[in-house]
Image 1 (cartoon, rainbow, N blue to C red):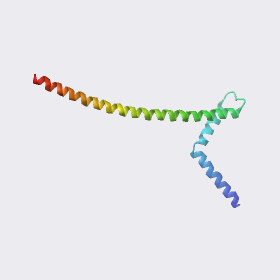
Image 2 (spheres, one colour; image 1 turned 90 degrees about the horizontal axis):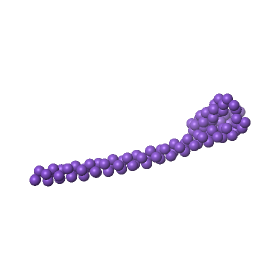
Image 3 (spheres, helix red, strand yellow; image 1 turned 90 degrees about the vertical axis):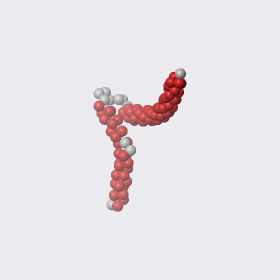
Image 4 (cartoon, rainbow, N blue to C red; image 1 turned 180 degrees about the vertical axis):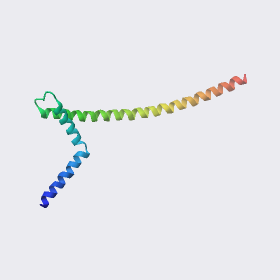
Length: 104
């Protein structure tokens, strides 16, 4: 009887792990998609593999987009700094030309 409870505990722990990591949601989504197909595919296993692969691609696309966002934020910060420096230089030149124009 104790062996049976230990086995149930392990199963429950594993089930929670699958839920926490999103495996249950991904599989449910694929199975729902398969269920909703008007014409069922000849090879259901291949259908599941393809749709689970699409989930992985979305994740790779997300990683690419996150990297692009990071790169663009760095570029934006650099351009803001450059803009600030150029404004300061322009202000100095304007001040110098006003002083030179007033002296004439």
